[in-house]
Image 1: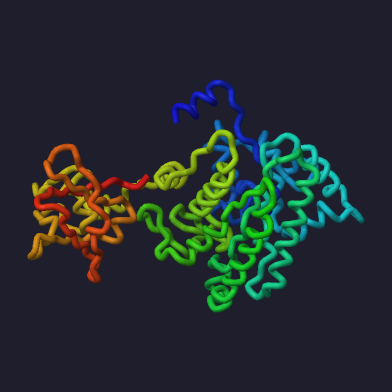
Image 2: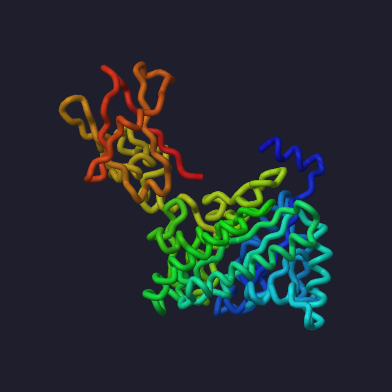
Length: 412
Protein backbone atom coordinates (compact mmCIF):
# COMPACT_ATOMS: atom_id res chain seq x y z
CA UNK A 1 0.00 0.00 0.00
CA UNK A 2 2.88 2.39 0.78
CA UNK A 3 4.21 1.78 -2.71
CA UNK A 4 0.86 2.66 -4.24
CA UNK A 5 0.53 5.82 -2.18
CA UNK A 6 4.08 6.88 -3.02
CA UNK A 7 3.38 6.45 -6.71
CA UNK A 8 0.38 8.74 -6.55
CA UNK A 9 2.22 11.23 -4.37
CA UNK A 10 4.77 11.49 -7.16
CA UNK A 11 2.04 12.60 -9.55
CA UNK A 12 0.51 9.50 -11.11
CA UNK A 13 -2.80 10.32 -12.78
CA UNK A 14 -6.00 8.47 -11.91
CA UNK A 15 -7.12 5.69 -14.24
CA UNK A 16 -9.61 7.16 -16.75
CA UNK A 17 -12.58 5.06 -17.86
CA UNK A 18 -15.17 5.77 -20.56
CA UNK A 19 -18.43 3.84 -20.34
CA UNK A 20 -21.14 3.12 -22.89
CA UNK A 21 -24.23 2.03 -20.99
CA UNK A 22 -27.79 2.46 -19.82
CA UNK A 23 -29.55 3.26 -16.52
CA UNK A 24 -27.26 0.94 -14.55
CA UNK A 25 -24.40 3.25 -15.48
CA UNK A 26 -25.96 6.72 -15.60
CA UNK A 27 -25.42 8.49 -12.28
CA UNK A 28 -28.32 7.58 -10.00
CA UNK A 29 -28.69 11.23 -8.95
CA UNK A 30 -30.37 11.79 -12.33
CA UNK A 31 -32.80 8.90 -11.76
CA UNK A 32 -34.78 10.15 -8.77
CA UNK A 33 -38.01 8.25 -9.56
CA UNK A 34 -36.41 5.14 -8.09
CA UNK A 35 -33.26 6.36 -6.29
CA UNK A 36 -35.04 8.77 -3.94
CA UNK A 37 -37.41 7.73 -1.12
CA UNK A 38 -41.09 8.20 -1.84
CA UNK A 39 -41.48 10.52 1.17
CA UNK A 40 -38.65 12.75 -0.08
CA UNK A 41 -38.70 12.35 -3.88
CA UNK A 42 -36.09 15.04 -4.58
CA UNK A 43 -33.40 13.59 -2.31
CA UNK A 44 -31.35 10.71 -3.73
CA UNK A 45 -30.46 8.12 -1.09
CA UNK A 46 -29.04 5.39 -3.36
CA UNK A 47 -25.92 5.60 -5.52
CA UNK A 48 -24.53 3.56 -8.38
CA UNK A 49 -21.07 2.22 -9.18
CA UNK A 50 -20.09 5.32 -11.17
CA UNK A 51 -20.76 7.55 -8.19
CA UNK A 52 -19.10 5.21 -5.70
CA UNK A 53 -15.87 4.89 -7.69
CA UNK A 54 -15.55 8.56 -8.61
CA UNK A 55 -16.34 9.68 -5.06
CA UNK A 56 -14.56 6.97 -3.04
CA UNK A 57 -11.52 6.26 -5.25
CA UNK A 58 -10.67 9.72 -6.67
CA UNK A 59 -6.92 9.18 -6.32
CA UNK A 60 -7.10 6.02 -8.42
CA UNK A 61 -10.13 6.41 -10.69
CA UNK A 62 -11.80 9.07 -12.82
CA UNK A 63 -14.48 9.39 -15.47
CA UNK A 64 -13.54 12.99 -16.21
CA UNK A 65 -14.99 16.28 -15.06
CA UNK A 66 -18.43 16.35 -13.52
CA UNK A 67 -21.37 18.60 -14.36
CA UNK A 68 -24.47 18.36 -12.21
CA UNK A 69 -26.68 20.44 -14.47
CA UNK A 70 -29.19 18.45 -16.56
CA UNK A 71 -28.60 19.17 -20.22
CA UNK A 72 -24.97 20.13 -19.61
CA UNK A 73 -23.97 18.18 -22.73
CA UNK A 74 -25.62 18.67 -26.10
CA UNK A 75 -25.97 14.93 -26.60
CA UNK A 76 -27.49 11.86 -24.93
CA UNK A 77 -25.37 12.15 -21.76
CA UNK A 78 -27.67 14.61 -19.97
CA UNK A 79 -25.34 15.68 -17.11
CA UNK A 80 -22.76 13.78 -15.10
CA UNK A 81 -19.17 12.72 -15.71
CA UNK A 82 -17.79 13.64 -19.11
CA UNK A 83 -16.69 10.10 -20.01
CA UNK A 84 -19.96 8.48 -18.90
CA UNK A 85 -21.97 7.83 -22.07
CA UNK A 86 -24.99 6.17 -20.50
CA UNK A 87 -28.60 6.62 -21.47
CA UNK A 88 -31.52 5.21 -19.43
CA UNK A 89 -33.69 2.90 -21.52
CA UNK A 90 -31.10 2.37 -24.22
CA UNK A 91 -30.62 -1.19 -25.40
CA UNK A 92 -27.47 -2.64 -26.88
CA UNK A 93 -29.45 -2.61 -30.11
CA UNK A 94 -30.11 1.13 -29.69
CA UNK A 95 -26.45 1.94 -29.13
CA UNK A 96 -25.48 -0.20 -32.12
CA UNK A 97 -27.87 1.87 -34.23
CA UNK A 98 -26.58 5.18 -32.89
CA UNK A 99 -22.97 4.28 -33.60
CA UNK A 100 -23.18 2.20 -36.76
CA UNK A 101 -26.30 3.31 -38.66
CA UNK A 102 -25.22 6.35 -40.67
CA UNK A 103 -28.35 6.52 -42.85
CA UNK A 104 -29.93 9.09 -40.52
CA UNK A 105 -28.70 10.70 -37.34
CA UNK A 106 -30.60 13.30 -35.37
CA UNK A 107 -28.64 16.20 -33.78
CA UNK A 108 -28.29 14.34 -30.45
CA UNK A 109 -26.86 11.30 -32.21
CA UNK A 110 -24.45 13.39 -34.26
CA UNK A 111 -23.21 15.19 -31.17
CA UNK A 112 -22.95 11.96 -29.15
CA UNK A 113 -20.90 10.20 -31.83
CA UNK A 114 -18.65 13.23 -32.34
CA UNK A 115 -17.92 13.67 -28.63
CA UNK A 116 -17.46 9.96 -27.96
CA UNK A 117 -15.01 9.59 -30.84
CA UNK A 118 -12.99 12.53 -29.49
CA UNK A 119 -12.98 11.13 -25.93
CA UNK A 120 -11.67 7.74 -27.04
CA UNK A 121 -8.26 9.34 -27.28
CA UNK A 122 -8.38 10.69 -23.72
CA UNK A 123 -9.04 7.58 -21.63
CA UNK A 124 -7.24 4.45 -20.43
CA UNK A 125 -10.05 1.98 -21.21
CA UNK A 126 -13.62 1.70 -22.48
CA UNK A 127 -16.38 -0.21 -20.73
CA UNK A 128 -19.36 -1.56 -22.68
CA UNK A 129 -22.07 -2.29 -20.11
CA UNK A 130 -25.29 -3.12 -21.95
CA UNK A 131 -27.82 -5.87 -22.62
CA UNK A 132 -30.10 -5.81 -19.59
CA UNK A 133 -32.73 -3.74 -21.39
CA UNK A 134 -32.65 -6.10 -24.39
CA UNK A 135 -33.50 -9.18 -22.30
CA UNK A 136 -36.91 -10.73 -21.85
CA UNK A 137 -37.85 -13.70 -19.70
CA UNK A 138 -39.34 -15.26 -22.82
CA UNK A 139 -36.39 -14.64 -25.12
CA UNK A 140 -35.07 -17.72 -26.92
CA UNK A 141 -31.38 -18.55 -27.16
CA UNK A 142 -31.47 -17.32 -30.76
CA UNK A 143 -33.00 -14.00 -29.73
CA UNK A 144 -30.55 -13.62 -26.87
CA UNK A 145 -27.64 -14.19 -29.21
CA UNK A 146 -28.71 -11.07 -31.08
CA UNK A 147 -27.69 -9.15 -27.93
CA UNK A 148 -24.19 -10.60 -28.23
CA UNK A 149 -24.06 -9.45 -31.86
CA UNK A 150 -25.11 -5.91 -30.93
CA UNK A 151 -22.44 -5.75 -28.21
CA UNK A 152 -19.94 -7.19 -30.68
CA UNK A 153 -20.78 -4.43 -33.18
CA UNK A 154 -20.23 -1.77 -30.50
CA UNK A 155 -16.93 -3.41 -29.57
CA UNK A 156 -15.87 -3.32 -33.24
CA UNK A 157 -16.83 0.34 -33.48
CA UNK A 158 -14.67 1.26 -30.48
CA UNK A 159 -11.76 -0.91 -31.64
CA UNK A 160 -11.79 0.69 -35.10
CA UNK A 161 -11.70 4.25 -33.75
CA UNK A 162 -9.80 4.04 -30.48
CA UNK A 163 -6.02 4.27 -30.18
CA UNK A 164 -4.24 1.01 -30.89
CA UNK A 165 -4.29 -1.46 -28.01
CA UNK A 166 -6.74 0.57 -25.91
CA UNK A 167 -8.26 -1.98 -23.48
CA UNK A 168 -11.97 -2.63 -23.89
CA UNK A 169 -13.96 -4.11 -21.01
CA UNK A 170 -17.18 -5.92 -21.85
CA UNK A 171 -19.67 -6.48 -19.05
CA UNK A 172 -21.65 -9.68 -18.97
CA UNK A 173 -25.42 -9.22 -18.99
CA UNK A 174 -27.18 -9.10 -15.60
CA UNK A 175 -30.09 -11.53 -15.37
CA UNK A 176 -33.32 -9.53 -15.04
CA UNK A 177 -34.97 -12.68 -13.71
CA UNK A 178 -33.15 -12.05 -10.42
CA UNK A 179 -35.06 -8.79 -9.86
CA UNK A 180 -38.19 -8.65 -7.69
CA UNK A 181 -40.11 -7.02 -10.54
CA UNK A 182 -39.66 -10.11 -12.70
CA UNK A 183 -39.05 -12.92 -10.22
CA UNK A 184 -41.97 -12.21 -7.89
CA UNK A 185 -44.35 -11.73 -10.80
CA UNK A 186 -43.37 -14.89 -12.65
CA UNK A 187 -40.95 -17.13 -10.73
CA UNK A 188 -41.35 -20.03 -13.15
CA UNK A 189 -40.39 -17.94 -16.17
CA UNK A 190 -37.52 -16.30 -14.25
CA UNK A 191 -36.09 -19.68 -13.31
CA UNK A 192 -36.45 -21.00 -16.84
CA UNK A 193 -34.80 -17.92 -18.34
CA UNK A 194 -31.77 -18.24 -16.09
CA UNK A 195 -30.06 -20.93 -18.15
CA UNK A 196 -30.67 -18.99 -21.36
CA UNK A 197 -29.04 -15.90 -19.85
CA UNK A 198 -26.14 -18.05 -18.67
CA UNK A 199 -25.75 -19.34 -22.24
CA UNK A 200 -25.77 -15.76 -23.55
CA UNK A 201 -23.03 -14.76 -21.13
CA UNK A 202 -20.97 -17.83 -21.93
CA UNK A 203 -21.16 -16.86 -25.60
CA UNK A 204 -20.17 -13.25 -24.82
CA UNK A 205 -17.15 -14.49 -22.87
CA UNK A 206 -16.15 -16.98 -25.58
CA UNK A 207 -16.49 -14.42 -28.38
CA UNK A 208 -15.43 -11.06 -26.97
CA UNK A 209 -13.23 -12.36 -24.17
CA UNK A 210 -10.99 -14.03 -26.74
CA UNK A 211 -10.32 -10.80 -28.62
CA UNK A 212 -7.02 -8.93 -28.15
CA UNK A 213 -6.96 -6.38 -25.32
CA UNK A 214 -10.51 -7.23 -24.30
CA UNK A 215 -11.45 -8.02 -20.70
CA UNK A 216 -14.66 -9.28 -19.12
CA UNK A 217 -16.43 -7.78 -16.10
CA UNK A 218 -18.56 -10.53 -14.58
CA UNK A 219 -21.67 -8.52 -13.71
CA UNK A 220 -23.68 -11.74 -13.93
CA UNK A 221 -21.97 -12.87 -10.72
CA UNK A 222 -24.19 -10.40 -8.84
CA UNK A 223 -27.45 -11.80 -10.18
CA UNK A 224 -26.19 -15.36 -9.69
CA UNK A 225 -25.44 -14.47 -6.08
CA UNK A 226 -28.92 -12.98 -5.63
CA UNK A 227 -30.38 -16.26 -6.87
CA UNK A 228 -28.12 -18.57 -4.90
CA UNK A 229 -27.03 -16.92 -1.65
CA UNK A 230 -29.96 -17.23 0.72
CA UNK A 231 -29.99 -15.08 2.71
CA UNK A 232 -27.99 -12.55 0.74
CA UNK A 233 -25.41 -11.10 3.13
CA UNK A 234 -22.10 -9.32 3.57
CA UNK A 235 -20.07 -10.81 6.44
CA UNK A 236 -23.28 -12.00 8.06
CA UNK A 237 -25.18 -8.71 7.72
CA UNK A 238 -28.33 -9.83 5.95
CA UNK A 239 -30.15 -7.93 3.22
CA UNK A 240 -33.80 -7.85 2.26
CA UNK A 241 -34.78 -9.03 -1.22
CA UNK A 242 -38.14 -7.28 -1.59
CA UNK A 243 -38.00 -3.53 -2.38
CA UNK A 244 -39.20 -0.80 -0.04
CA UNK A 245 -40.65 2.60 -0.98
CA UNK A 246 -38.07 4.44 1.15
CA UNK A 247 -34.94 2.68 -0.18
CA UNK A 248 -33.56 1.62 3.22
CA UNK A 249 -29.86 0.66 3.07
CA UNK A 250 -30.27 -3.07 3.81
CA UNK A 251 -32.34 -3.75 0.70
CA UNK A 252 -30.78 -5.30 -2.39
CA UNK A 253 -32.95 -3.36 -4.84
CA UNK A 254 -34.21 0.16 -5.24
CA UNK A 255 -37.88 0.84 -4.68
CA UNK A 256 -38.73 0.08 -8.31
CA UNK A 257 -37.79 -3.57 -7.74
CA UNK A 258 -35.58 -3.55 -10.83
CA UNK A 259 -32.42 -1.49 -10.29
CA UNK A 260 -29.80 -2.64 -7.76
CA UNK A 261 -29.48 -0.62 -4.57
CA UNK A 262 -26.24 0.45 -2.91
CA UNK A 263 -25.04 -3.04 -2.01
CA UNK A 264 -25.58 -4.37 -5.53
CA UNK A 265 -23.91 -1.36 -7.09
CA UNK A 266 -20.90 -1.72 -4.77
CA UNK A 267 -20.51 -5.32 -5.92
CA UNK A 268 -20.80 -4.17 -9.55
CA UNK A 269 -18.03 -1.63 -8.85
CA UNK A 270 -15.80 -4.43 -7.59
CA UNK A 271 -16.41 -6.54 -10.69
CA UNK A 272 -15.44 -3.59 -12.90
CA UNK A 273 -12.33 -2.94 -10.80
CA UNK A 274 -11.41 -6.63 -11.01
CA UNK A 275 -11.44 -6.33 -14.80
CA UNK A 276 -9.46 -3.08 -14.75
CA UNK A 277 -6.86 -4.53 -12.40
CA UNK A 278 -6.00 -7.21 -14.94
CA UNK A 279 -4.15 -4.59 -16.98
CA UNK A 280 -3.93 -1.29 -15.06
CA UNK A 281 -0.42 -0.18 -14.14
CA UNK A 282 -1.55 0.58 -10.59
CA UNK A 283 -4.21 -1.71 -9.07
CA UNK A 284 -7.29 0.09 -7.77
CA UNK A 285 -8.39 -1.14 -4.31
CA UNK A 286 -11.70 -2.97 -4.29
CA UNK A 287 -14.36 -2.18 -1.71
CA UNK A 288 -14.07 -4.59 1.20
CA UNK A 289 -17.29 -5.81 2.78
CA UNK A 290 -16.49 -3.75 5.86
CA UNK A 291 -15.99 -0.61 3.77
CA UNK A 292 -19.28 -1.22 1.96
CA UNK A 293 -21.14 -1.66 5.23
CA UNK A 294 -19.47 1.21 7.07
CA UNK A 295 -18.81 3.90 4.50
CA UNK A 296 -21.36 3.21 1.77
CA UNK A 297 -24.32 1.95 3.81
CA UNK A 298 -23.65 3.62 7.18
CA UNK A 299 -24.04 0.32 9.02
CA UNK A 300 -22.07 -1.24 11.87
CA UNK A 301 -20.14 -4.16 10.26
CA UNK A 302 -19.94 -5.85 13.67
CA UNK A 303 -23.73 -5.94 14.11
CA UNK A 304 -24.07 -9.74 13.74
CA UNK A 305 -21.61 -10.20 16.62
CA UNK A 306 -23.24 -7.44 18.69
CA UNK A 307 -26.68 -9.01 18.25
CA UNK A 308 -25.29 -12.28 19.61
CA UNK A 309 -23.16 -11.04 22.48
CA UNK A 310 -25.59 -8.51 23.94
CA UNK A 311 -24.11 -6.91 27.06
CA UNK A 312 -21.27 -9.46 27.44
CA UNK A 313 -18.67 -7.07 26.04
CA UNK A 314 -16.20 -6.86 23.17
CA UNK A 315 -14.74 -9.57 20.98
CA UNK A 316 -11.70 -10.18 23.19
CA UNK A 317 -13.49 -10.03 26.52
CA UNK A 318 -14.22 -13.23 28.47
CA UNK A 319 -16.77 -12.44 31.18
CA UNK A 320 -17.42 -16.10 32.08
CA UNK A 321 -13.69 -16.90 32.45
CA UNK A 322 -13.91 -20.09 30.42
CA UNK A 323 -10.87 -19.30 28.21
CA UNK A 324 -13.17 -18.55 25.27
CA UNK A 325 -13.29 -14.84 24.36
CA UNK A 326 -16.62 -13.56 23.14
CA UNK A 327 -15.74 -13.81 19.44
CA UNK A 328 -15.04 -17.53 19.87
CA UNK A 329 -18.27 -17.94 21.84
CA UNK A 330 -20.04 -16.43 18.82
CA UNK A 331 -18.29 -18.71 16.34
CA UNK A 332 -18.98 -21.80 18.47
CA UNK A 333 -22.53 -20.66 19.34
CA UNK A 334 -21.90 -20.97 23.10
CA UNK A 335 -23.20 -18.72 25.86
CA UNK A 336 -20.73 -15.87 26.58
CA UNK A 337 -22.21 -15.45 30.07
CA UNK A 338 -21.83 -19.09 31.14
CA UNK A 339 -18.66 -21.27 31.08
CA UNK A 340 -18.52 -23.67 28.16
CA UNK A 341 -15.99 -26.25 26.97
CA UNK A 342 -14.56 -25.59 23.53
CA UNK A 343 -14.33 -29.31 22.70
CA UNK A 344 -16.11 -32.58 23.25
CA UNK A 345 -13.43 -35.18 23.94
CA UNK A 346 -13.82 -38.66 22.48
CA UNK A 347 -12.13 -41.99 23.20
CA UNK A 348 -8.86 -42.59 21.36
CA UNK A 349 -7.47 -39.08 21.72
CA UNK A 350 -9.84 -37.33 19.34
CA UNK A 351 -12.05 -34.35 20.00
CA UNK A 352 -14.78 -32.40 18.22
CA UNK A 353 -15.90 -28.80 18.04
CA UNK A 354 -18.98 -27.37 16.36
CA UNK A 355 -18.70 -24.03 14.54
CA UNK A 356 -21.77 -21.93 13.84
CA UNK A 357 -22.48 -21.77 10.12
CA UNK A 358 -24.15 -18.37 10.48
CA UNK A 359 -21.32 -16.90 12.58
CA UNK A 360 -18.71 -18.10 10.07
CA UNK A 361 -20.16 -15.55 7.64
CA UNK A 362 -18.78 -12.88 9.98
CA UNK A 363 -15.33 -14.24 10.87
CA UNK A 364 -12.82 -16.83 9.77
CA UNK A 365 -12.03 -19.63 12.21
CA UNK A 366 -8.87 -21.69 11.88
CA UNK A 367 -7.29 -24.32 14.10
CA UNK A 368 -3.62 -24.37 15.06
CA UNK A 369 -1.40 -26.91 16.79
CA UNK A 370 1.92 -26.86 18.64
CA UNK A 371 4.03 -29.48 20.41
CA UNK A 372 5.60 -26.98 22.80
CA UNK A 373 3.04 -24.28 23.62
CA UNK A 374 5.52 -21.70 22.30
CA UNK A 375 5.25 -19.57 19.18
CA UNK A 376 5.67 -22.45 16.71
CA UNK A 377 1.94 -22.75 16.04
CA UNK A 378 1.09 -24.23 12.66
CA UNK A 379 -2.25 -25.01 11.00
CA UNK A 380 -3.65 -28.43 11.78
CA UNK A 381 -3.40 -30.49 8.56
CA UNK A 382 -6.68 -30.34 6.71
CA UNK A 383 -6.76 -34.12 6.55
CA UNK A 384 -6.89 -34.15 10.36
CA UNK A 385 -10.07 -32.03 10.45
CA UNK A 386 -12.96 -34.26 9.44
CA UNK A 387 -16.44 -32.71 9.00
CA UNK A 388 -19.21 -34.80 10.58
CA UNK A 389 -22.83 -35.15 9.50
CA UNK A 390 -24.06 -33.20 12.54
CA UNK A 391 -21.97 -30.14 11.57
CA UNK A 392 -19.17 -30.80 14.06
CA UNK A 393 -15.49 -31.11 13.14
CA UNK A 394 -13.52 -34.10 14.41
CA UNK A 395 -9.86 -33.43 15.23
CA UNK A 396 -7.51 -36.34 14.61
CA UNK A 397 -4.16 -35.97 16.44
CA UNK A 398 -1.03 -36.10 14.31
CA UNK A 399 1.45 -36.59 17.15
CA UNK A 400 1.77 -38.13 20.62
CA UNK A 401 1.22 -34.84 22.44
CA UNK A 402 -0.14 -31.68 20.89
CA UNK A 403 -1.62 -28.42 22.05
CA UNK A 404 -4.38 -26.77 20.07
CA UNK A 405 -5.78 -23.27 19.79
CA UNK A 406 -8.36 -21.43 17.72
CA UNK A 407 -7.58 -18.39 15.61
CA UNK A 408 -10.62 -16.18 14.97
CA UNK A 409 -10.38 -13.14 12.68
CA UNK A 410 -13.32 -10.93 11.57
CA UNK A 411 -13.64 -10.87 7.80
CA UNK A 412 -12.38 -7.72 6.04
